[in-house]
Image 1: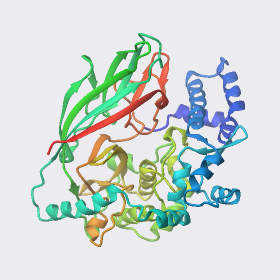
Image 2: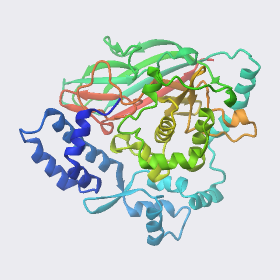
Image 3: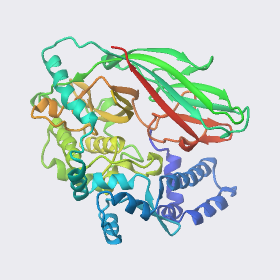
Image 4: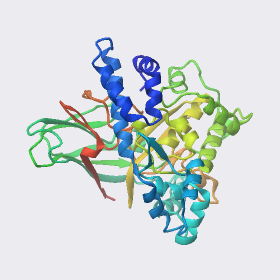
Length: 464
């Protein structure tokens, strides 16, 4: 998970080049990288680092394809008189994400929809036209979380939710030459105490497959198939598992001090480059949020509440294009589930609270999607789930309001128990997703297969 020493040295060695890339001078940077790659003076690791910087630029180009006219056309639905001055103001206040790439201003692919989530005035305008911006998931949680709490508080038995899903990845035709072997790692649910159990593989469209095992932080099923000319290459499996909701009812007064000599504590309060770093931005924000508070539970709850109130959800760029996700979140003041979770984890660790990543899928009826959340650790209690993205539920009941601070429902399907870890079997080329693992990873002997070369689909059945 930790950024390698070689990568850190490479970043320092090519600091000027990286600066040019971050300024959007892609074409000149690509030429510079091509020249460096033919040098015999660079190590294999340094060349790998440079190749990925070139790949990163390609990924950014894919993420930034909207024009100013695209933004104007979308905004006219809510603001018929939208003009250049408005666009410029939204760029300046950070509501509208853009990059200058080789001298041309390009907007993030989801910047137009994000604009009416991030900008408070525009959000009000959209609400005035469309009504409340709550979605079906909001209503589902507001209705069902109190029911879960009542049963848990009364110690009533809650039957596990049995779920079956079929996961399919389809590589587009002719992405690799005929008869070349495509290697695929697909996300697979992990056994995780009482929250997720009875995981059972039902079917797989390959005779040969490998399950990653309990020691891997990314849980996967590994498959291989030969590509056929003019045909998609399809990988598919079905699995069943059981899941239960969980809520820790924690009294802040009963929180005890940490064993700061334990391996657990030392591991999960330290920095982890590149996305969990105690930058000046993190330190300043922490001081603003925490003040003089010393109780770990109250500190974590303050962080959870501040992010909920100040960092709106917004569609995110591919994580592999971001150099430091937690600092990016502070700079942009918005983020999706993983971005908000990494900010939460970083602030907790900086304050001496062990925190770690979890992710997989949310399988709520009518709202199936990729999802990230986290866990924090309290001495004498253990790891408790925290879903920073689901955040505070609209409720007058305190335990319902803060259900996802120390609780989770039965529809959070766990695949990953950390981020940026290794795969089994080992992957040979750079990852499409360098942080998370939810859609899958594919490659062939000629290189990685990025997300634009294949499609994925999750079909869910609720068995009770």
